[in-house]
Amino acid sequence: MVTSMRLLGIDWGTSNRRAYLVGPGGACLDRRSDDQGMLAARPDFGPSLAALLADMGTGADVPVVASGMIGSAQGWKETPYLDASVPLEDLPQHLVPVQDAASGRSCLLVPGYREQDGEGRVDVIRGEEMQLLGAVAMGRRDGWFVLPGTHSKWVRLEEGVIRHVSTFMTGEFFATLGKQGTLAPLMDGPDIDAAFDAGVAEAGHRALLTNALFGVRARVVTGAMPAAHTRSFVSGLLIGAELLAALDLTSDARGEVVSIAAPRLHGYYARAGGQLGIALAPLDPDAVYVAALGLFLDRMPFP
View: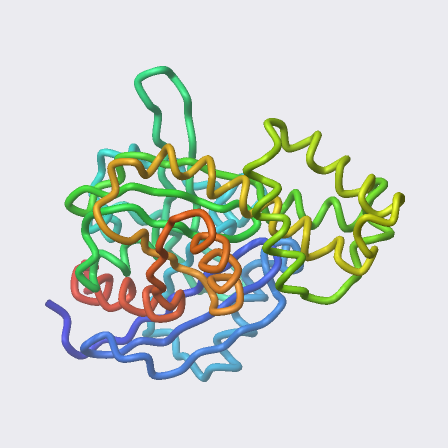
């Protein structure tokens, strides 16, 4: 076990980047957050990493581990998905090195996971595996987890091994509806709890989501709902539809589903869950990421 090393972990997503410097015992010594995600840094990933390290005063002796879309086909180097049968705690043995010739610095990329069920359906995670590993490190080895976001993930763990993954494009769909289409001009209203709750309720009344979404426009143009309610109503409708689908997934759940999300996003899911009968227990995404890095610090084969 390494007791004197430090480790820099980077959650390098599509749009944003978060970095955490951990030391002995998994203590977080420093952190940064910026908008230099994969799209902004591409193709100069090496110089972008060098700038981050310089800003944090991190020397060349500190190993760097990066997870997320930085390891996708559009990122620095594509890292193959691990089979879901590989325990999360074995991730430190499956890192993929990438070298930046200009800076002379190397970075170790964390692979995602691929899960295929008995009927041939395939799903993947890339980036969320670190948060799940952190949850395992914090003692949450079994049960259902939801990781809301652009692509919301529902994952079942058994003894720290992924047994099921289901992804919902809830966040991406919400963002797209706000940018284009017939609902877009109506999607700039404030957060209104009553409208959100009404959207969650509507998710349970309509058999098809596309039908329910057209019904949103119909409500507004006929005066049945104020236009200012549209954004919150659609948010509740989409999250409600996701949670209703998850009710079938989590029918074997004992107790709460663990939610790994920022407080504001967790609040939306917990509010909708309370309406639909799904109790969500929050875990802080920064805390679980740091916990995962603490486990990496103990298990990586440092020289």
